[in-house]
Amino acid sequence: MAKGYWVSVYPAISDPEMLTDYNKLAGPAVRAAGGRVLSNFGRVVAHEAGITQRVVLIEFDSFEQAAAAYESEAYQKALVALPDGFERDFRIVEGID
Image (cartoon, rainbow, N blue to C red; front, side):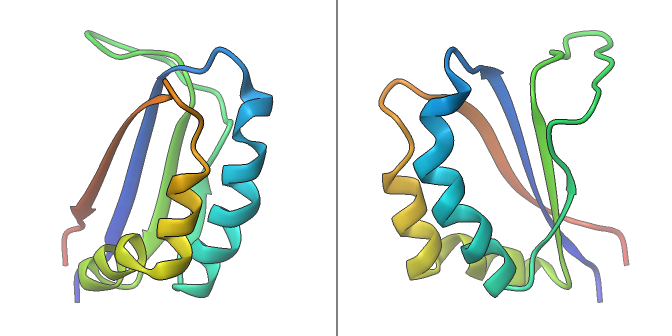
């Protein structure tokens, strides 16, 4: 079965401290849904149209599990905690089986 991934790219984070409430809720929600953080706050080398800001990569055992985690009540509560004007590019992608 192909794994599922959350891929989040943050084009701009003006104040990382503003993410505190979101992080307090999102981390436990992701772990409870079976997610494993593979990359967070690590080094980034951007090429072509890429950006060097924060990239988060989270792995799930399946695409369906990744999609369900996003729709979960716990993660939806975390989304409400994202600050106004906050920008991120978020995708759920299916890995290769």
